[in-house]
Amino acid sequence: MSNTPSRKVLNRLLAIDWADDTAAFQHAPSRALLMREYLRRAALWAQSYKAERSWPFFDIAAHIDVTITTPLDVTEDLEQILKDLAPASLRTTCSGAVRWAALRDARPDLLEKFPDPYEPLLRMYERGGGFYLQEYLDLNGVMIPLRNVESNASTTPLVTLSPATLDALDGEGESTYFAKISDGYPRHSPRGIVRRRVDDDQTHDEAFTRNLRWEPTEYLKLYDLGHNDIDHVQITEIEAATFIETLTEKLAGPS
Image (cartoon, rainbow, N blue to C red):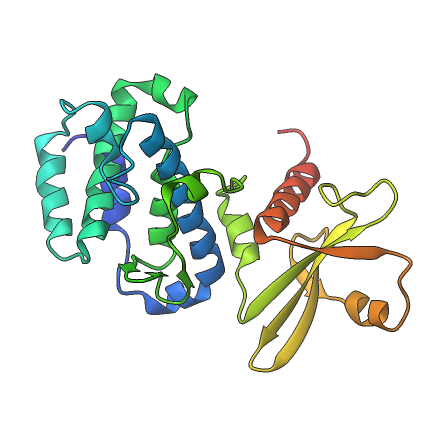
């Protein structure tokens, strides 16, 4: 059996529980972020290689080098996976990810242009399986709009695919994130972040602490009562991810 990059990607696909609805719901927020990041990266590659009509779920390697092949044992095992997967767009991306690994191995210079297009999608699959393409993208736990190539290519990048950071963005219910700001601590480098999570009509206010986890906080309630020496501003999930990743790296110190 080969031990090529394409085999390593195939092994990741083999390890996925495609019917794990529980994981899909538990990781709904991070899966949505990973799908959006895939759509962004795929849009950049599509624009670069005049493949806009094939976007969003397509075999990118085929648009770069039609001669690229994978080892026979990889091809045979991949076919066994694909026959049980639906929809067709899911099969296309799994096949595309395997072929992309082979192309990347032959052309390591490719990633100097844009980041790996399939890695966010692979990580999304590993966090709860696939998707269904309807009027919206249905990720079995969350639905997101598809939009078009141009709008996806211009979206803000997700700065990290770290499992720990992705886990920190998950949580039951709907979350709204805020950055605590003051002099010397602007939105892009805040004093800290908090979130208000609403689940089954219950509100949970949490701060991401130096313990690298969400812990209960009274900040938002106290702010509403007039204890507002430190201000805050609503931020996106991607901005929250950036703060979490930065804090994690800072506390980890030199490697």
